[in-house]
Image (tube, rainbow, N blue to C red):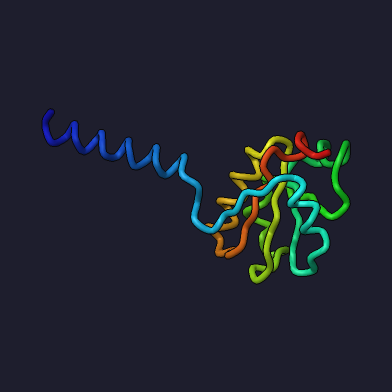
Length: 119
């Protein structure tokens, strides 16, 4: 392999590692652990599903800020408080968690399994 091929391989490996490794500062919790957080006063809960999904089924503590508009609405959240994020399966909330981290939120928590896992 020549140097160019090595560079391409290294870039690809870095991309894959960055994509799949958890982002520092983002916690993952179960739905039971999310319910336990309802008792805490310094926690913000956001549901990043579409308004239609949210209207169909949601937990009262969670405010709806769809993923598509999250980046432009982070000013509605307090960066000094923990943010617990949920969606339907945990995929969109993981993406939303990354957006929040990049915008300076220190304590971001993703609910694994999302509303599908809620019992």
